[in-house]
Image 1 (cartoon, rainbow, N blue to C red):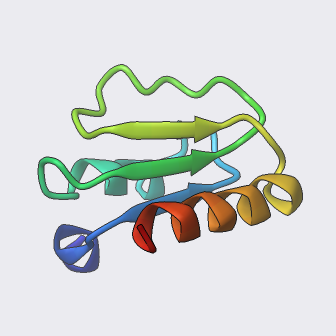
Image 2 (image 1 turned 30 degrees about the vertical axis):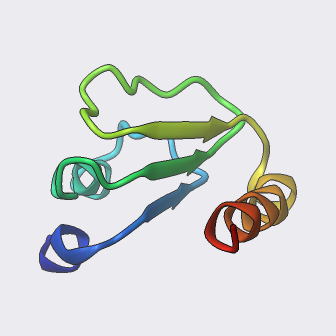
Length: 76
Protein backbone atom coordinates (compact mmCIF):
# COMPACT_ATOMS: atom_id res chain seq x y z
CA UNK A 1 0.00 0.00 0.00
CA UNK A 2 2.70 2.48 0.96
CA UNK A 3 4.66 1.94 -2.26
CA UNK A 4 1.53 2.30 -4.40
CA UNK A 5 0.73 5.57 -2.65
CA UNK A 6 4.07 7.04 -3.76
CA UNK A 7 4.00 5.78 -7.36
CA UNK A 8 4.23 8.17 -10.29
CA UNK A 9 2.84 5.47 -12.62
CA UNK A 10 1.19 2.13 -11.89
CA UNK A 11 1.56 -0.80 -14.25
CA UNK A 12 -0.66 -3.83 -13.72
CA UNK A 13 0.02 -6.94 -15.79
CA UNK A 14 -2.06 -10.07 -16.19
CA UNK A 15 -4.81 -9.73 -13.64
CA UNK A 16 -8.56 -9.67 -13.63
CA UNK A 17 -8.50 -7.09 -10.80
CA UNK A 18 -10.78 -9.47 -8.91
CA UNK A 19 -8.32 -11.23 -6.57
CA UNK A 20 -7.74 -9.39 -3.32
CA UNK A 21 -5.71 -7.98 -1.68
CA UNK A 22 -3.55 -7.41 -4.78
CA UNK A 23 -6.47 -6.00 -6.78
CA UNK A 24 -6.95 -3.26 -4.21
CA UNK A 25 -3.53 -1.71 -4.88
CA UNK A 26 -4.93 0.40 -7.73
CA UNK A 27 -7.04 2.23 -5.15
CA UNK A 28 -3.98 3.42 -3.18
CA UNK A 29 -2.47 5.35 -6.09
CA UNK A 30 -2.72 9.13 -5.74
CA UNK A 31 -5.39 10.90 -7.78
CA UNK A 32 -4.23 11.68 -11.29
CA UNK A 33 -1.51 9.03 -11.41
CA UNK A 34 -1.94 7.02 -14.63
CA UNK A 35 -2.61 3.30 -14.42
CA UNK A 36 -1.61 1.03 -17.29
CA UNK A 37 -3.32 -2.35 -17.38
CA UNK A 38 -2.03 -5.15 -19.59
CA UNK A 39 -4.53 -8.01 -19.71
CA UNK A 40 -6.41 -9.71 -22.54
CA UNK A 41 -9.66 -9.82 -20.58
CA UNK A 42 -12.16 -7.17 -19.63
CA UNK A 43 -11.55 -6.47 -15.94
CA UNK A 44 -14.00 -4.24 -14.13
CA UNK A 45 -12.32 -0.83 -13.96
CA UNK A 46 -15.46 1.14 -13.11
CA UNK A 47 -14.29 1.92 -9.57
CA UNK A 48 -10.85 3.16 -10.63
CA UNK A 49 -10.81 6.95 -10.49
CA UNK A 50 -7.40 7.43 -12.11
CA UNK A 51 -6.72 7.70 -15.83
CA UNK A 52 -6.43 4.13 -17.11
CA UNK A 53 -4.99 2.72 -20.31
CA UNK A 54 -5.96 -0.89 -21.02
CA UNK A 55 -3.82 -2.87 -23.43
CA UNK A 56 -5.89 -5.95 -24.25
CA UNK A 57 -3.01 -8.37 -24.80
CA UNK A 58 -1.18 -11.10 -22.93
CA UNK A 59 1.76 -9.81 -20.93
CA UNK A 60 4.34 -11.18 -23.39
CA UNK A 61 2.80 -9.07 -26.17
CA UNK A 62 1.35 -6.15 -24.24
CA UNK A 63 4.33 -5.26 -22.05
CA UNK A 64 6.66 -4.55 -25.01
CA UNK A 65 3.86 -2.45 -26.53
CA UNK A 66 3.53 -0.54 -23.28
CA UNK A 67 7.29 0.01 -23.07
CA UNK A 68 7.25 1.61 -26.52
CA UNK A 69 4.21 3.72 -25.62
CA UNK A 70 5.84 4.96 -22.42
CA UNK A 71 9.10 5.71 -24.19
CA UNK A 72 7.16 7.84 -26.68
CA UNK A 73 5.19 9.61 -23.93
CA UNK A 74 8.11 10.33 -21.61
CA UNK A 75 10.70 11.33 -24.19
CA UNK A 76 8.65 14.08 -25.81
